Image (cartoon, rainbow, N blue to C red):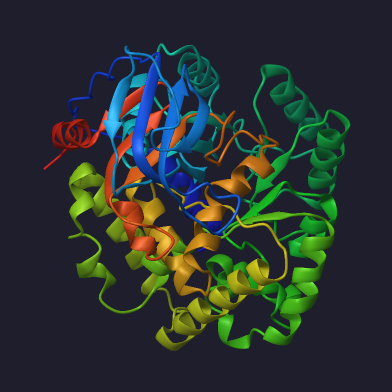
Length: 459
């Protein structure tokens, strides 16, 4: 299994709808929307503002105040939100939009995100048509979450010389991509250095995987915007890892987790914090792809799998089987792998390393939108409070993107909002109790969401 990370990426190239489903027509744009008597989860702090009226005009929150003390026009759409909770829309910071020319299948993925309260996505496997897609979303021609997109991935099988690396980075900067994606198979040390130096020279952030040729320490020193999947983290805890073959290490260190020396974690965390490297754990992958137990029967029968094709589910089953049937896979080591990853996530959170919400959807048993809510639960399982978990997909995202108006509920913020039936600060599972989603100036009611999802079923 040479360079096993490549399996992850090759799958994403094929993970696209086969059967055409009925895409919804977007709801009408609204000049003014009011959430009446709602409990606000502002996200600046771990608190709830009870019984508030929230007024939105043309995609921006204009005023928030106690019920009865805020004014709006007679033409406003007024939503009775008494007893409900209003929080910022969530972000999926490791998403995959199908990397091909078919805009319709791209829109299907976007809809699944939006209907689940995901109002921002960071596409991690870029394609030239994603630039067009991003522009059409911004103009309103295509409905979907706001999109930040990487360019086509930079990997060792495409970039073989430093000159090719320089050319690729400059071309992606010129094309207008938001950032660079580092992928497997690994860049050589010389090509990686050329990518990093050129990216800094043209002010182009880079993120993603950690090439085994440089390891996590080299990645930190290079100044990644984010390291995703905890890639290289478990490996960095294993003495003598530099002498092991990739086949023996496994995906993200899956086969060697029993050798991890967790006393090394503080040094890793200190280095990440000192260089202000953000981390996207994508714990969903570890929990749903690599975990031992009843995953082969439990996950394929989950309700959200009706939105994936039979071929997708078969591919996912085969991918899991290839991992768990590998001679290097051991149930006890896999359990240790889960434990060490949770320790790493908790240590990042406790010691000031910024975490971002991401589930790598669509991916093995991770359906777009739905998997974000699983990821939130996995973060809580790792030791985060519900507020800390929610922050990874809201407030932290605004900070990462240098957008103080994103990921919060306050006057002047963008009106990407998620209305819930229950308080997510007391139970993270309440993010699934969606009463409606506001994407800018389009209101997706609970009825609309149900009907839209029904039309998108594949079985």
